[in-house]
Length: 472
Image (cartoon, rainbow, N blue to C red; front, side, top):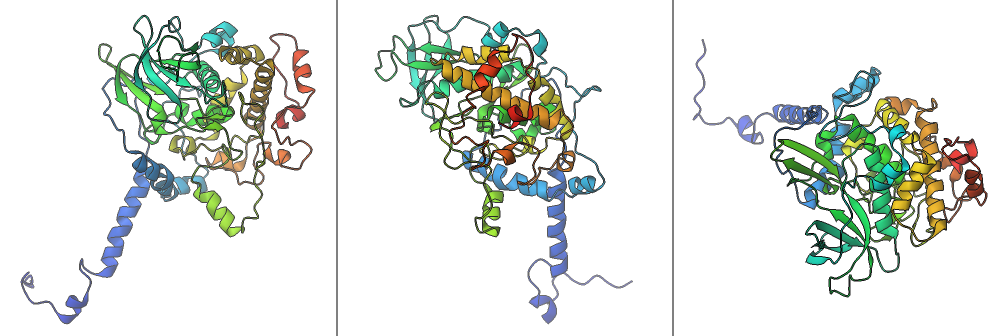
């Protein structure tokens, strides 16, 4: 047997010329193995239990880390997930876990099944609220510093703690109304949301607040753990399909920072909450939506590459000159494609939504009656009837697009593989509502005849979507 060379022997000229770390091919192989492991691990199901009985750790991260992960690291890992691509070639989809035999999901720390056919308009009006609203006078304990919305943390006359958020002076009712409508409808679909009320601020002694309309969000029960990561719950059908509900409402601010975990020490149970609907409907924290919001991420690498390749000649699916309907409503219309919809930042749970996930929640959204939607809008206490009527029409029209896309055999081969259709030929209605077409409204307004057509319906009758209603 040949003796093992001494570790201290002099290096040959060839060995000395090699880069540190061994033969270059071995180094490449090691790097490739690491990349493959990362890619495969990036596609594994995380397999959360339905009821979380152990206190989760606080996984909050700085915004810059969250931004890098969701905009680059996670999407790249998903792109390099070889088992995902192999499964697509074989006609397989990465289906959600924790799904019952009938395709539904069980009650859990994340979700509560609510039967919309048994919820009255009064139930929708109340939403998650289980107690009387805050009682003035209010006391300011801390002026709100984070986020875009203005407001303060405080207590009411009974000592209950609330977060009070105010509208921008130039856009009264915009963000507060969107918060209430969004929270009522997301609650009705089964998700955990805070109790929210519309109030008039009284008794603080602060001229910035007293006399102004505000949203009062009651503090959540239990110990605050911190936000959860959508990436960590991407195996759950209810979290994937939440993309459909947020897209229906155009609630574009669906980041990890707008989630929360609470811990019930006595019951040994964690709850996962969806927060902040100030960017729903036509609103954002900074005023009305921009036309591109809901169509592009704030930092959208795909759109940047598309513009680069096409020299900026690719047609946008939205009107860059679209204007808000009113100061209270903002920019909210029926130019909507469920598969193409995007939040401000990539969301890995939404990216994993499959046809089965989408169909499950689309059936629930389609079960809303006009009376139930009207009740959610009434809870926001908009002062103008025109605004209330317009929001109802847009919600019904966007619901009709969901029904047409997911419940009428309108799936595409792209959706069956879990991917997104291309910008052209997507199953939604945006292609029929391009700027310059006769169906397009630069102000996002419904046709003048729409309110009267809806008003002639028998109360309680389910609206039927004609092609004109579905596509505007």
